[in-house]
Amino acid sequence: MIRSLRWAALALALGSALAAAQEPGGDVPIPDDLLAVLTLRGKPCGRVVDYQRQGDSDYLVTCSDGHRYRVFVGARDQVVIEDR
Amino acid sequence: MSALGRAALAALIGWVVACGPAEEPSAEAPAEPPQAAPPAETPAPAPPPAPAIPPAPARQKPAVPAPSPAPGPPAPPVSEPAPDSAPAPEEPPPPAPPALSLEELGQRIKETKALGVFTKLALKNDIDALLAAIAAYHERGEGRIEVLRTRFEALVLKVTTLLEKDEPALATALARSRDDIWSRLVDPVAFAKITT
Picture 1 (cartoon, helix red, strand yellow):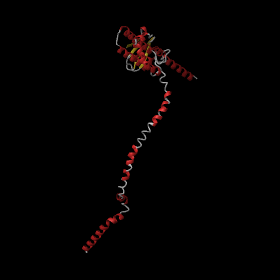
Picture 2: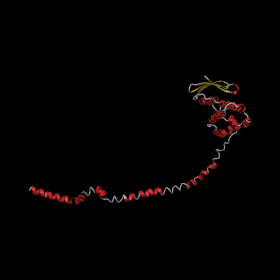
Picture 3: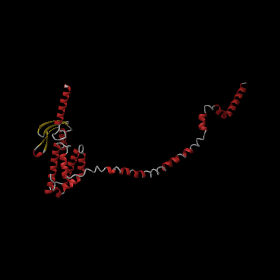
Picture 4: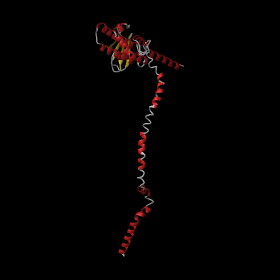
């Protein structure tokens, strides 16, 4: 009984973690979205190995090739990418 | 005596030699028949003519069959097109994705779940920038149309690449609509009617 409850809790935590990795209202995982933006803007990255949310639509991205970027929405809804 | 013996031996040898050719085959008959038979049976030369004849027919046959197959294929192609033409009517689905207008395309991109929020916003930024540059070209003659066309093509390629995995139909529609969209963008009158 206790073991099944542990499994349920683990599944719930896993589901929450996966849901948190998705942009609200979207089906695209945040790392994929961030990588697509970097690719669109011609920024070298490889793949996103880590990202940290710093605010609303504001992320610090770490790429597999060592590059780090800050990706955020600036004035007039412009997507801005800063090298870090 | 020895001389007599030699004479007798020589006579015997001479007799044996004289009869040798006839006796050797008989004497070695058990062992040599296989070897002697083939060479002795010069009928082998006779077979050559036979093989010679077959090659000729063989060469003629290919030539003869060739013509027959040649006419043959024409028949199959005629019969094959029929089966092909049968499935062809079933292929109309591909043409199903019709060319999209600029407005429809924008709406489809907004609604698709294949792109994330950041990606959509970045694309909108790029599209707005391109439209602003085209507007400057139409209104003030700024820039070169070749450069604008290159930017447009690059943007279409980016969007198509992003969509082709999860929204292949939309990617295909965009590719089909590319020339129509560009013709609208480059036409000042049609461009003025575009609402973003």
